[in-house]
Image (cartoon, rainbow, N blue to C red):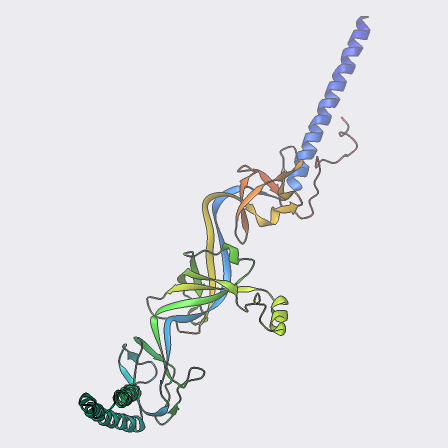
Length: 370
């Protein structure tokens, strides 16, 4: 009996030792396997979401100076890059014909006024009818209107600057015929207020929903590669750059729009205190759409999606990989904010080839022999 008891205790002890050894081996194998899985840690940092776009720098205020009458340019009093003030005389037109018309109109006014006064007297004494007086009055009024028009045309031979600014580009030369008209008038010169500039940028339709009035931005230009300029969103166009929504446009235009990416114009007010930027420069813009300090983030590379939503593979301490659905917030170029579903310090599998499983341990045929 005593011998059997001793044997039983020995067998039990051996079993416990073997079981403990297997458990230790299993944990060790799991830990070793976990070390081989590439991971990243959910951590806190400042995150910023941006939208990139390309645009053209232009002055906020600019005008094309043209003539309201057709006449030959007599003189141009400014040149390219000259600074002008609103109301300053910048050019004159040959006004001989218009001055002659004004003199003729003035003579007609004097003549018809005298006739009207005489007719008024004759009508008052019954020598002329009321109808005769009305005709004389009509002729006098018409002559006055003609004189006003002639005076206006004669005054238009003096060309003044509509705004204060800088003459951009070479003005037309003296001797050039300045043609008036609403469709295609002769542009004598262009004046721009270069103290206030804007960027007109094209933003992809996938990003336009993130743009808001007042958002800050930075941009660079090729002329000053070592400088970064700042700007603010001031206007968001409500239609795409090609008006592809307009069904009245030509079919070829619509077809071209449908085959390409849709863009919307976004206008940004530029900060240029040193007046370095010039019209038509190309600006590469980065608009800050959202930011958050001390956000819990993971690299974009570990975020996966399926029909149920976004998830990551969490590597547990025992080596198992857990599919964990998460709620995301701000996206940057490299990171994504995690609003819920993860805790700081948790390890996330960072491998596109890692397989989801209940355990990362492998069966090696049992524990090593004792």
